[in-house]
Length: 69
Image (tube, one colour):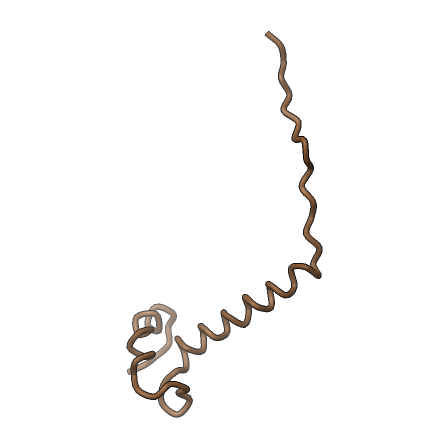
C-alpha cells in the first residue's frame, strides 16, 4: 500500500485589515442600530410613533434585560 499525502494546491491568502475594516464598521453600526431599537425605542426617544416597534422587540427586551414595564 502506498502512502498518500494530501497537499493543497492553493494556500489560503490572509485578508488585509484595510479590506475588512469597512465591513467591521458596517456590522458595528447595524449592531448599534439593533441595540437602539431593542433597548431605547419608546417614549421620549422614539423615532417611530406608536408602540409597533416596542411590541415587535418586546420579548427581545426582556431576554437582554432591558426594563419596559
